[in-house]
Length: 391
Image (tube, rainbow, N blue to C red; front, side):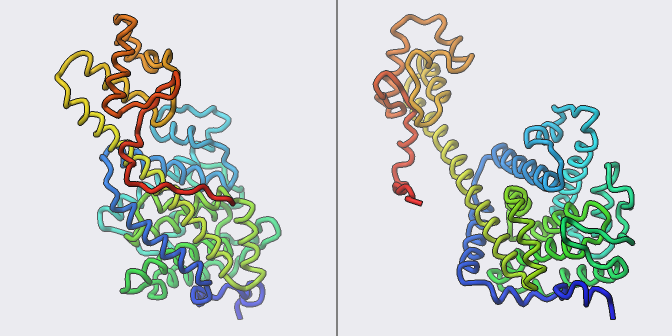
């Protein structure tokens, strides 16, 4: 009999706990599917959409390394991605960790986009670990990409017996690749894809098959499962890593509870709730982006109804520079941007008054005492007011 059957009886490679999820969790999965479809179909200009995914990628890479102690911020990770941030020599190892994650994430996306999604195998999981640890300051007894042959633990938790790790990793790969997590029904298929990703992460944490980098490997595997499912838009595939990082204390409590209680219901519920919370934030962000695009378009439509002139161009520049629905003192308006400062530098004292009055007449600006605000509410006319929560 294998050792893990006595030491880790909760490792069963069964997903029957999915059927024990509470109705509210199933409702959350339905909401997640709806929001994923909303995100996937949201029309955004290419540059805006590209920036939206870039932000999600940065957050995901920062989160998955931060959980294991990397202290580089999102801004620094963004700088590493675009080459604008030079990491001090003492933190070069942290940069390498982040670069490895970014490269691995991008390779998965490229493979899926090219229609060459990899199958989940023991060798693939080991290759993920090798790539993530390549060139990093890892534990001295860890060999990148090699299943450990010694005992490991995180806090009070001990990983599966070393002598069983090769076997268990093979079992995990076969299980995740099996029909257990597949359905021809798209609604059920979506729920199973999310569950598969979460189970992959949880079982990797339970097995802890590598001497170092198991957490990053687990989150990369989770990412692959969501991306290749084709049911979650790319920005959403980073949300689970973000959730674990933002709730790190709860993350470790849920991992411990899952093994102690011999059930995965609580961890599944915790992960699904975080996934939906992240989707809600992304939907809000996309709505704000779409509103801004519509606002800019509306400004151009309104101003184009006037004859071409320097005054018209200056007025359009002014309203475009103003943040939506944020009253600004009148004397600050001509210096909001360097371009505005240049345009108003050669005008008389009444020019600004004429510009503001015309923009107010068009409905593009509103006056609040001695302050002026861009009237973005003009294009929100059909959005119902949302009452503030008392909670």
